[in-house]
Amino acid sequence: MNETIKSQLAHRTIREFTDQAVSDSVMHTLFEVAMRTPTSRGMQNASIIWVKDSEKKRTLAQINAQEYVARAPIYLLFVADLSRTAAVLEESGLNAAGAHTMDVYTEAFTDACLMVQNVVVAAESLGLGATILGGLLSDPGAVIDLLNLPQLTFPVLGLMLGYPNQHPQLKPRMAQELRVMVDHYERPDSWSEALADYDVLMHTYYDLRTADRREDTFTEQIRQKYGAVRPQHERLIQQLARQGFRVEAVAA
Image (tube, rainbow, N blue to C red; front, side):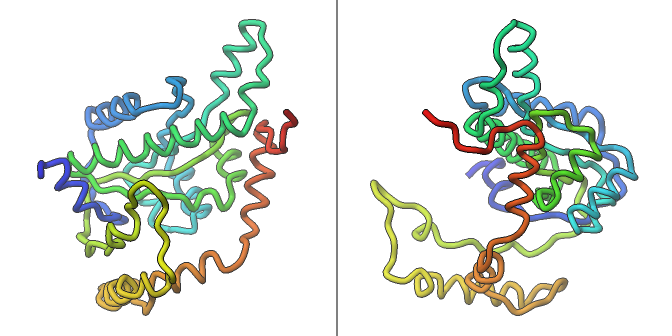
């Protein structure tokens, strides 16, 4: 057990921050961490937009449907970015079609996600708190328009950072035995039964919270969140196509 692991095991989502400013030197360090994040094929097809404009942060809060986003001292948008790659190809007199495919978008999406997590680990080690924001994908077109994202770029995740002004409970996680497998996929006879103990933990966690009090379980959240196909899926596909990615199947 070292200090890095202690910090990771103590991870909590922080939504409220103090007025203490995050220094430029700290931000420079976090951006350097982002630059050193592993990247698919070494292509570094992910970028970061530091949103400082307060009006834009208010709009992002509305898109995310989370009002506290507008109060975040630091808001970073992580972007899948194939625009740079396409430009290099075009400037070299080559066909840029290889930068438009969904497998390459997936590489860039993964790069952006890895950058987010790397920055979170670094930020928490420096005493900052963080919240990763996926709600912006409910309306990616609005984010694209707000921040003038060019063709072959796409918003992936937002990230709020600042010095914590709250100390929420540690949220329970499933036991390792349910998610760590050896040599092959291991599936219980009934996932609902296997998750019963975790449901009890989650129910107690929500029941004891001092804010956002609710009765809930993990399996009930699955039913609520995945019980029907959300309309956002179709909009996501449409916006990917709008940004120049080939979402249709390509014949061999």
